[in-house]
Length: 183
Image (cartoon, rainbow, N blue to C red; front, top):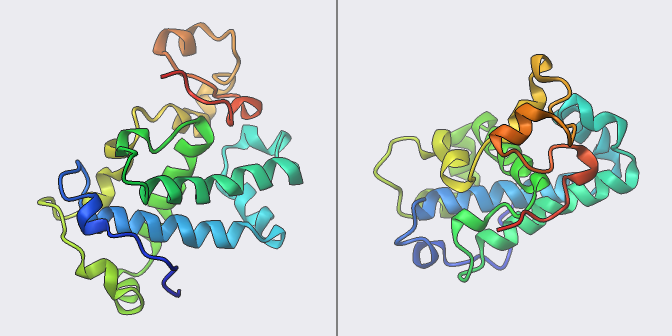
């Protein structure tokens, strides 16, 4: 796990943000790590296993390349001083990417990350002891995409689903994941 360059100044970018500079730096590192991993087509099978079952029918090589590129897009937004954390996800694919980044960071050995990425530990941390648990809630407007993992909600991705329309869920069908949200 090498430190990607150039490194944004997360301490300044996130000094008055709802997420701490340390969390922003960690999310950026996770996004870079997954972007590098999934840019390699040899890891597309692994990526497929991380996606909701409905995506499997649509996730051909081209679709997976588009999805893998969203990790870099999220990393770029985390490093952009003009974009607020509430604008981190611009489409459903980005929402799922944020969840995958958080899950990956949660699965990494924290001591190993600190040893190999001391710059993350050196960043100011937030008042909460474990912001990572709340990262998706802090960075996303909702968690609708997570409904796609629930077999009891099979069909929720359909555009004519009355429950989905009632909840205001947008672009849940995999063919719509890259469509920008209407803000």
